[in-house]
Length: 129
Figure 1 (cartoon, rainbow, N blue to C red):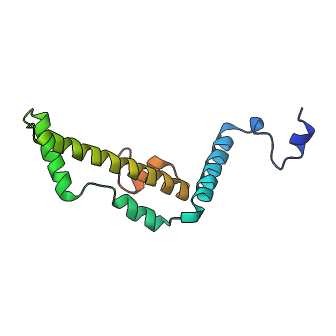
Figure 2: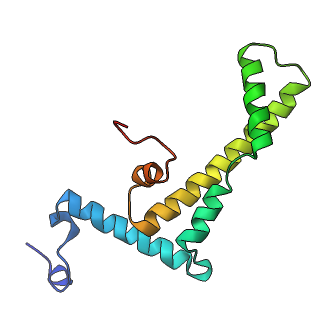
Figure 3: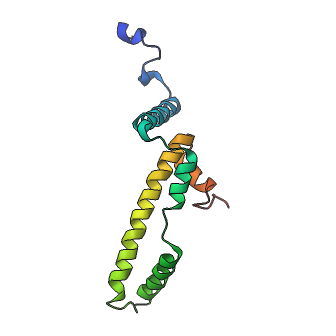
């Protein structure tokens, strides 16, 4: 039996809702909270996409990273190359973390699952694709 306070609510008690409905509500609430938090510096999808595209090593850095990674794998990385490689690894990790944060914001803004967004943007291959 519901309490008088619960009966006056404009929605049923959450415990009575099916799991799928609770997940939908939670996703909507998370998106609303995100939008409220970013109201002062609201970003458009275009701005987010530009920022996402900027979160990668430059071509020269990527080429050097790949060369040094191959040398590491072949056990031919020199002592002088090791710090350079570690700096590139660190920079790449920071950029990937920033990219993931931006992708999460964009997925919530579009109200789509993160993996679906990443597939749409070509960041991961589509299943069966």
